[in-house]
Image (tube, rainbow over all chains, first blue to last red; front, side, top):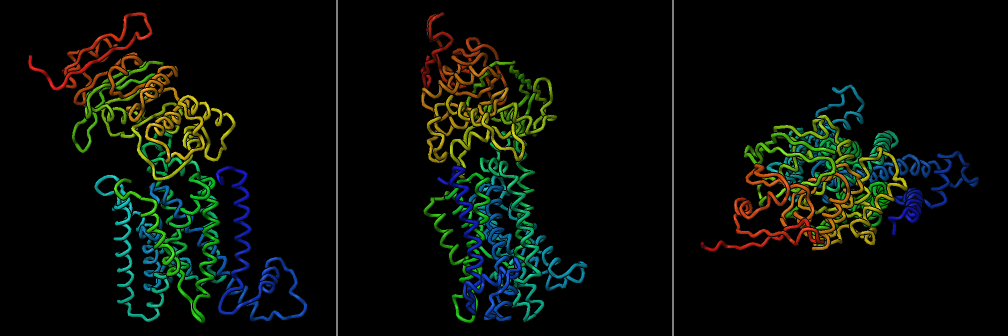
Length: 353
Length: 263
């Protein structure tokens, strides 16, 4: 039904409205509750210069909570949700496998190893860049190494299969996690332990106006880039042989797409750590709603991913009083059963491709 | 569009699979490749449609070396129906056939009405018009095969390559597929298994055994009892399907006997 252009447009409008509404609604939620009209007033005050209510019941501290703490976090959350969903869609098309996802293929842990390396070895001072830049760069390099590694491993000795792909991801995950742990242990650094916890469990707590722009920019640019590639992505799904006979240089396209998604993943991981399964669940849900055509799948997956992440993070903030559940734990708790569902209920064949 | 293959040899994992194959397909000609399993038909075709470019020899399209033709340009002129592989993703039948228009479109171009028209015609030709909005994954093997043929037709090629296109097809759609290939008016090269079926459609056959072409020419000259015995190792009796001039003309009836009887 949503495959036709009329209903599809309506669906995208609903999603956009849902995203905006979620951004406002989730900014009320957290350790300190803020009422919806107050949150809306603060946001419109900062965004559009609308005056705050005259009675002056909104104090500076409430303003700070909404505008300095929660809103950047909401922007970052939406960007990361969208970016992870996009990376999942693109990686699934590139390796022609519905189980491909940054976390499962070990690319997130490669990126998080890169970030750990950058922080522990003080790469920030060597690379002549500010902290955010160099951590992102190393994180990107880590995700590139992991991408190349998982592809080489999965296609070693012939055709790439699902089981080889998932196993290769597992191997890289174990390897990079061990390497990160090794660095931390050698550094014997209490702060490092906390940092590592951050990278491996994923959290949006570090969001602030200083680190939101890079991720937001990269995710937006990535979305625009992949939207222009919709036809090639569709053709890639038909398999290498068909794609070649339909005029696509499949090998080159695959590498370009995977490098760009590695860039996305590296950027996101350096800001929020590894958040698993979002890139698996969201594309599946989006595909079941709008079909596999990337012209519709990309916008749908990006928007659903953003909304999902906003509410997942709101849950992470509010589930435990006076504390936070790292969001990566939450997405894994939802994502692992989802993985089982895809594997069992969808009768996914691990024998073939 | 003409095809000329000169002294083609292909080795896979250093094992020679095809050696010194030469063949030609003229403008509008329908050539059938025959031969037993593993004789190198598919390997030859895969080199011709550029899936395997590690070969020695020359492949010329209208006299131009294939190595100098860009992939997208090639896809505008040559369409391929290969032995079908299942895909893990689901598209509607219409979306799959629409992909056949991709080589003719710019990266961001939208499908025009004429593209949609071509897709509808192509689906109609293979009797799949009423399935346009069905999910491709829900189709049977034979139906998928016909959709892939429709996708190739939507490419509006000047040359059609078919690798065992009648696998999975019932008798009506075997006839339909080969009739489409013959009546399309473009050159066609097809690897086929059924000798009798091939005999009623192709202009010329090219008989392969163990990686080499051992005979090429009109069906009646190439498909004989002796050759069938030599190539397939079975006894066969080949007779014209009907007296010259009637509706059955142009075909052969092939009867087999297996295992061999002594004497």
